[in-house]
Length: 346
Ligand code: NAD
Ligand code: UD2
Image (cartoon, rainbow, N blue to C red; front, side, top):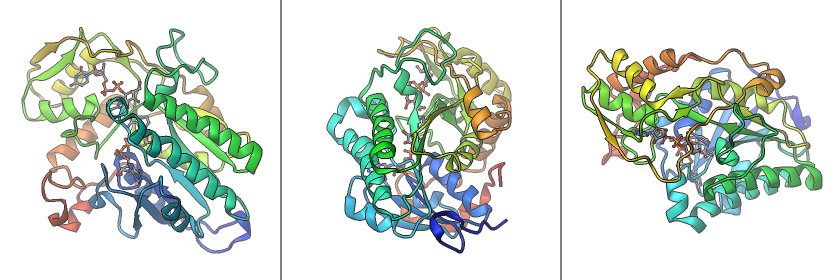
């Protein structure tokens, strides 16, 4: 279905800017936007993302989201912006405090400032994180829970929410922030030291290798499948407002790391061999969100079950990880590998 543009008095097809569109979540969003007939431009510096992730027909502007000149060029003529570009790693925020701050908070302010310059104001849907909550005891976390981040990454994501509010009040920029919990799915690179536990476990167990569990494995997470995150982002664009709302994107279902390992081993038909290591320092024991407000505001369907999502990750790994460039030869990867994997929402 093609969407005629009704916003900002423009006519014609809708054009969206997706920052970070070459990354894990952004590439799925671009594919879904293209599948419904939207025009898509991506601003990405390819620092962790890969051009091979991009769906056909997406325009790539290679640049830094913290560079106002690059942002201005990328925002030209768009009807909305999905802002995902960030250094999505708590650990890197520890080691590169100022550098990650520039990408994660200054980059967001740059997007909001440019959105304010457009005559009709450009609506912005941006990625926040469950990291804004820190270690909060009252579970499941609702959006009105106290925000007390424990990391520079979480502090910057909370800063994004505060600046989005300022953008709404002072500059009339409509926005909406989505607090993603632990997102998983195909194209999350298991070789990255910052990758999520699901991609690591699926990678190891699909090859019959042991997995490492930090601590006793009783810690729990709210794992949300990437296709559900894409659905939430697309629905959120219509709900951007100058009140700058924020919503959780989660399932409300806890899964322990030990349970996860067992489910993945079963899916891979392999014996589970666990190597135990001490708990990671500063780690949250339980992270669980309430999806109720987002479901009500965005009209979201029930989230995908964990096993269904896991099966797609394992299928993607077995297909040779299409879309992810081989570690040392990203420029040589054949472009037609992109079409080997079709996400469920297409
Ligand atoms: P990712 O690393 O796969 O994608 C990030 C993309 O942004 C990459 O393509 C990277 O090249 C690009 N990028 C990084 N810095 C940039 C810069 N300065 N200028 C331009 N492009 C830049 O990460 P992801 O998991 O897809 O995360 C997407 C967003 O969702 C991020 O904002 C992240 O903080 C947020 N988030 C992710 C999770 C998760 O579980 N994956 C959880 C909470 C929030
Ligand atoms: C997630 C996000 C992080 C930040 C944080 C906020 C990812 C990848 N990271 O960190 O960016 O938003 O939430 O709270 O989404 N584990 C193992 N073995 C492994 C790998 C991990 O036991 O090989 C454990 C790990 O100790 C943790 C759990 O699995 O208890 C989840 O780890 P993670 O790195 O996937 O995500 P998390 O919640 O630490």
